[in-house]
Length: 418
Image (cartoon, rainbow, N blue to C red):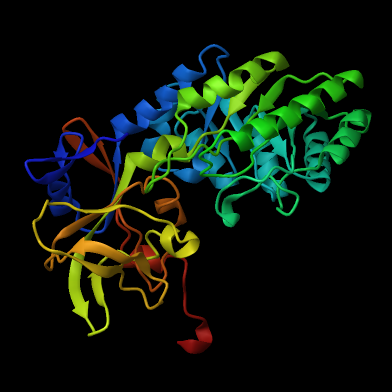
């Protein structure tokens, strides 16, 4: 569910008309609903209240300061994957003990900054990474909590680019190697092995892959206890899917009902890392029509947003519902909805039945709150678009539109070309 709806023919975000925002900030832009964001976080919090997990929002899905601050204010922690995300998390006042740090490629400087900031724990993805963290902790005279990211070799029914839980992927450590590491804990005096972590992929709409992975990890926990290895945390990652088109994903309560019996048996403190589930349907991408082109073979609705703004359709073949910002009785015809980028892959929809809009008419690309702005670029020397948040009947720009000076900042001509 979300708080984008038509009222008297106009598309609204909560109590604000989308076209009124476009008139103020220009197009294209991202638009987030505060109410939807908080509601989705609350659904997970309520569904799992019996075990009171640490719910760490996955910043990689959306790192807008207003988005993460809204969630932290509701009691969320943050799941980070880079030094930049760490800095943003600390900038908005997140308690470091509510930050967990994933990523297969942490640099020495990133590790150092995270240790000095006092994060809760690192999710470790490989033996070389563990060695790097141990060496830095030794250098800093600290003892650091880590969780080993287990690769349970579970296939998730999702796009191949966003499945992460099989041994064909770069993520995590196999069970046999993990056991060896944990049994050799004495080799790492500056490391406290505190937990296990799993994350099998993203946009997973059924419970079976989650249950398979959790059951495997629980069996592994029993094996470790036979080795007299006791842990404190089990991080079950994220990956809950949302509705983009015709998916039938499980609700937060459905998911909780299926996994809670298993999680309770572990006796461990549970950490969760939802991202898309919280923010995906809390955001839209607004763009406007430039031209309707008919080459005699096919029709193209050309808009001012492009693949540099929202790359999911190009990268994953992802479907996004697209709605006119003003309801229309114009006849629907089959067309491609495309941007101005000089790439054939620059599209938002292919062969979509859509009304023939006029120049200047607004479109809303729905379910764009996750992996939208965070994956945007300056390709074709295009400034990244503004981000706007609505709460009730008010809206504010939370990220300004980039201008030319932003795009050439840091560039200079070598003296031999002057």
